[in-house]
Amino acid sequence: MLKWYEETGENEDVVISSRVRLARNLSKYPFPIRLSKEQAKNLLDEFKAKLATLAGEGDRNYKYLSMDAISDTDKVALVERHLLSEALVMKTEPAGAMLSEDEVVSILFNEEDHVRIQALAGGMNLEKAWQVADQLDNEINQSFSYAYHEKLGYLTSFPTNVGTGLRVSYMLHLPAIAGTKRLAGIAADIGRFGVTIRGNGIGNLYQIYNQKTLGQTEEEIMQNLTTIASQIIKQERRIRKKLTQENPISIEDTLLRSYGVLKYCKTLEIEEGMNLLSDIQFGLTSGILKQKEGAKKSIYPLMMGIQPAHLQQLAGKPLDDKGRNIIRAEYVKGHLPEILV
Image 1 (cartoon, rainbow, N blue to C red):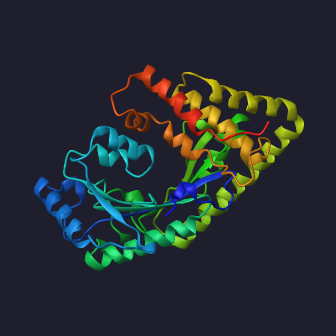
Image 2: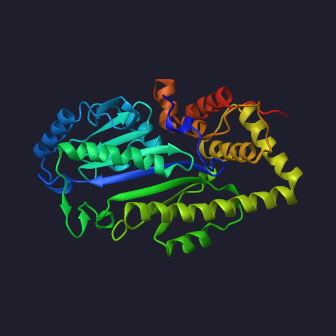
Image 3: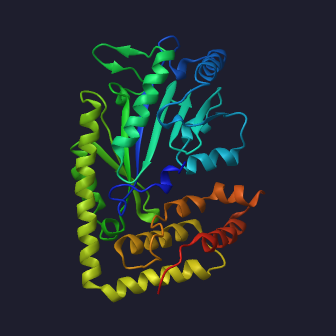
């Protein structure tokens, strides 16, 4: 079974991934912030016992991870792949997760809520991710009674999640918009519609997601986000086209230089690596850089692979910054797609 980032999806020249997350609490236990250590352990034991035969969509295979039984490096690597949250791995109370082998699904236990169900899909496939998460939600609800209010909806630890408990997001690659300093204006515009954009600019990756979960149906929340994402996609494509038409030689030169650095460097820092790989992603999806026919265009798996904890796992030993930069360069050269010049 392919992992989510190995699948193709709509608008994959701009949209890296789609994510659905559902926050749920059980009616029989206090919210996580008020759970005693014994209650937290009992809750985990119940989850493990009743969800041992969890199937969900596609008869996926799952593995259970206890947060006190895996190394810090493995925890961080799972955060880097967006399978675990920083809040979960920082927990000192009993906590755990169930992960599907294809990394489409992660179910977090005793994080900020008793249960958080997450489903991922490559490209613009929010509906696909929703179907997976919704089916799992129904399956879990057959074994556990959720905390639910007739008027408010699902009750959660944070008021911003009350209602549907649904957070949906798209991960976007926006080199043209970011490069022309238009993100601030976009953030202000979409904020009026209850949508937020965040990102630190490294690799030109940005996540857009809904802020409100109360007073809207799940379908309305997803449609609102998709409509806004579609407008951002159009703007990104329009700016890319303008840039490549006005300065074709300059753009191609920049992208080929980035490829040359990645192909021949001996040491590579994380921020430089992410930004250079962003250039390659832009070049491949825009058709400026050419590959052999049938080759995959997504560079995102390579972006995940050069993260610090992934490199630490690859080395199998502790690394300092210098050691990571050397291994990062080697890793990129070993996985960089062949560009036809």
